[in-house]
Length: 242
Ligand SMILES: [Zn+2]
Image (cartoon, rainbow, N blue to C red; front, side, top):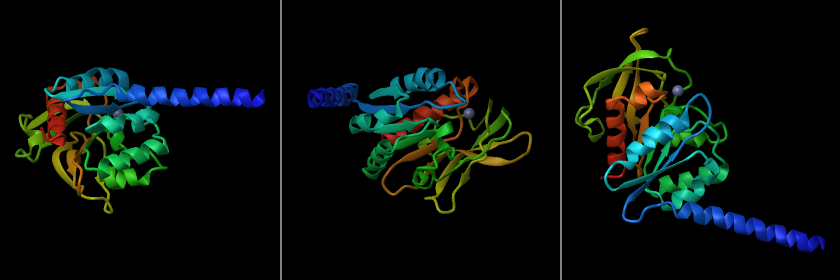
């Protein structure tokens, strides 16, 4: 009797895992580039800004299909059918999904890392900051207006973006790590309070993958801003080589 219950329980678990896996596999669009946006964690309204603004914006790009999840355990299932991963979360990522992301990038698939995802979030995944973010942020200046200045106007990611633009955001004190891969800074943020300058949009010098880091994006001040939206759209187009 006990064995029978155990067998039934095991059968149920196996069918449940199968449902999760196949459920994840059916959400991609054939003949389109598929994008997974991952959110969730603390200090931000991920549903409002990353799901209902950014993911919708990415979905409006011709030839692109974007979905959003805040279930980091599901990343490993989704990635099998994805062409681009956009991380915005600061909640933990389980080891199995960390490994799936590492495999994804090693295959040459691109990453876009937004705001909270360029922080030093995960002590259990030191490779993340060194190999993908190219460094990271551990603090930010006071939430207030600062000036964004495009310092590379010939890059496809800054095409059509205002040469300088101001909005309220957290200016991350972002620093490339000396042991990281190196970054190519496209836009800097100039603090109008302290006069300090930090990278806010950059690409990472990865050997096989296209990686974009954007430190902007705390709330509506950035997500509804025309230049932020242009930077994100351009980044998706560049990452997917569209
Ligand atoms: Zn923030």
